[in-house]
Image (cartoon, rainbow, N blue to C red):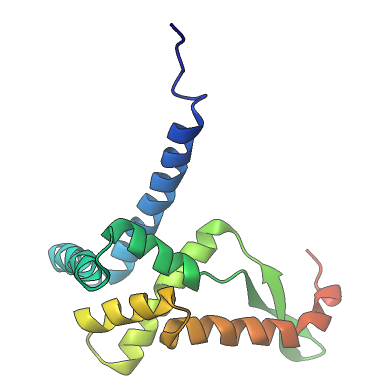
Length: 160
């Protein structure tokens, strides 16, 4: 009888990796919803988002939530750098933690700009449209990417 340890099993390590990122996305998204100490409201809102995602797409809500946020995550962003009295945006790659935070903040920021209050159906529609490479958040990602491509010549001036 062979014994497969928990650490050497490829399937279990894959699931651990998947649930780790699922936990990170949930925590950051949930934390960005909280303002003025309204934890109960943010938790209920978050649960309703997942429930409505499941109703609209007829799939597992955790996987839909993770996949929609993975579609929005940026690969590179512009960071300010002062050159010759002007502030230029230098494109640099970002870490996974920053990718997570920027993707969740974009969704919340885009919805807060449109309405003063974030509505449940708007969040669900933005997430579903991100799955199919559309919507406000995906356009925002592509706009940032195009700015980075336009400023790619500034990379050589940036000193780490």
